[in-house]
View (cartoon, rainbow, N blue to C red):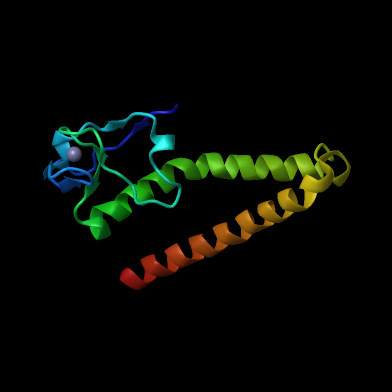
Length: 136
Ligand SMILES: [Zn+2]
């Protein structure tokens, strides 16, 4: 039953409700989304808040510009924690605290997930650096 506080990145950005006919500016919506885990699928688009008329989710009209901002914002905020979790697990494995013996059938999943995180992090960072260099 977690609530999600949406960052107001652009008060004048156009938003609209997915359920009713309401549309308006981002600053007019309720930024706290109550019980968001039950309302937002993991792969769904990022909502901009709750509708002032019907309390359902509202979304940015222009997804390409500010919508990507929301994703970047979330990724930036989570990345340090993610890195900490990853390096913590790697250390626990190298210290022999987490072993194939004490994890049993979960070992393969754990090991391959840690490897995938490392690989994917490298790929994403490389892509981002390439993009920055290209756009310069
Ligand atoms: Zn609505």
